[in-house]
Length: 69
Image (cartoon, rainbow, N blue to C red; front, side):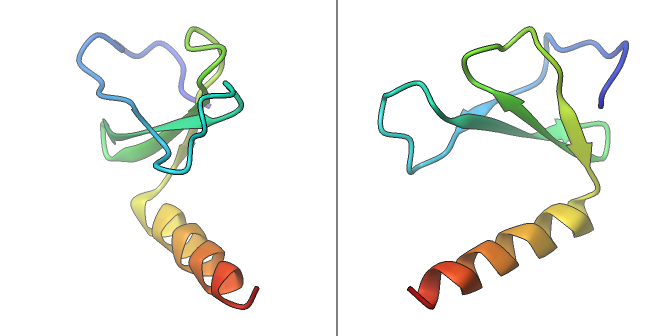
């Protein structure tokens, strides 16, 4: 998780698959070399941080899994 970081300059974006129900995540790619992930319903809550390599691996695996269905 990200601790003690200035969040004022961070740009969060919602998933393009967000349906407006409020059950979505937001991603930030400008967290000092990390990719941040947070719950859109709790923007002041905890943030998970991943290395760009780990995040890219997750995205590739998710897309590959989705194409199988």
